[in-house]
Amino acid sequence: MGARTFCIAALFGLGLALGACASGKGQQPGAQSPERQSDAEYDIARDFFQKGSTRLALDHVQKAVALNEENDKAHYLMGAILLAFCSGPRLFEGPDCKLAEVEKSARAALKANPDFRDAKNLLGQVLINEKKYKEAITVLEPLTKDPAYVHPYLAWGNLGWAQVLDGQIDAGLAALKNAVTEPRFCVGYYRLGIGYEKKGDPGQAEQSFTTAVSVDDPQCTSLQDAWEARARVRIRLGKATEARADYERCIEISKETQTGKTCVRELAKMAQATPPATSGGGAARSSAALAWKLPEVNPNE
Image (tube, rainbow, N blue to C red; front, side, top):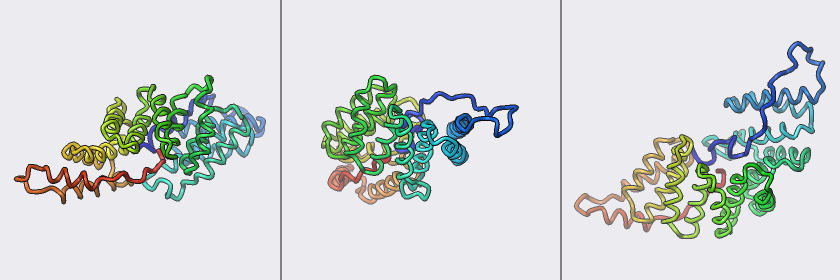
């Protein structure tokens, strides 16, 4: 699993109270007000989404919005569901990934409820995905200072990521350090590692990536982007054996994702560069280090 697919509910702060998933048992369909019917459809959609039935969830949340355009929770949930369609192997290139629609849903939630803090975080996230980094920073910075927000580490994580991708490395590192005060936020550690890598500090980057994949959670130990990134910096540090193991772990997670394909390609390069055993392996490390470069970072994490 890549960083972009990590724990959608947590990453977007889907902390809304789960209301009774009832549709007026014993009542005729037309007996409820549109608002109550909308809330019932929202509850059904949220339940389906939590169970992984994304398309069924989308069907019901669309009904919720149609019944009540002021249902801020339904607009927010629609945005989270739509963003989930961008987490497949093709990422933003997938036919069902429509970032403009995610942004539209987040803004609709905020129009209905300007104080909807989770919707602000979601808007900041999708703006990052759309590479609108400065706009994302404008949305997220006030959220990190809002004492009423119950998921501050998410806001700090997204703010720091936007800053790193915008080239504001030092500010981004400071924000991401605030994000990882939540010790299980492994995506935050991954992003911190990218920040250190961009700053030219592969040692700190390696440490951050190691922390990311060491969190005792299957979604963290399978954080594919972190394994690939640690392999990359370990090559720069001359740790070819350790890098090879990281690439192998990355491939075990998946060969089908963009990250998995990168790991397959880089491991093949290492195999081609490996000299005869009599050389002691030093030439391989040197060659790999010279070939290292920081690739473009896809901000869909």
